[in-house]
Amino acid sequence: AKILVLHGPNLNLLGVREPDVYGRETLSDINASLSARAQAAGHDLSWFQSNAEHELIARIHQARDEGTAIVLINPAAFTHTSVAIRDALAGVAIPFIEIHLSNPHAREPFRHKSYLSDLAIGVISGFGGDSYRLALEAALSRLATPAT
Ligand code: DQA
Image 1: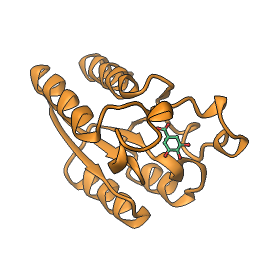
Image 2: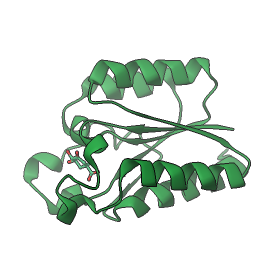
Image 3: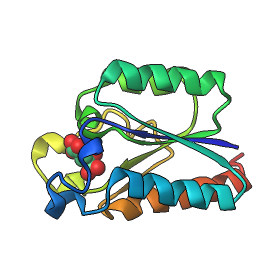
């Protein structure tokens, strides 16, 4: 099945950006580990990072045309601001898992609100790069045993 991983704004700086909060792993490290795992499980994983809300929205629309089975998304700061990304995900009706490297609930109050969580299958936060890997494991097990 097709799996799409979306990374929101500033995640291109991973490894350099506030390593105490986000870890030392780079985005390419994370993408490489996810691609390898998905491929070993017989799936087709793509990833996309953008700092622009409209590009993330366009990629979500494209995912529908491609028949993407599941989306893993770290919306980064758009988590806390973007009705438009919420509406895009709702609009394409592709099940998605929300991911955060940090635990937003242990941080500033403005990070406690997510525009996506109530639509997500689930949310995985606080485990650094492992948040993505844990989300992928959850996606793989869901693809193996589709929810009825
Ligand atoms: C983040 C948490 C957000 O609050 C923040 O704006 C980010 C990254 C995370 O992965 O921990 O950019 O989504």
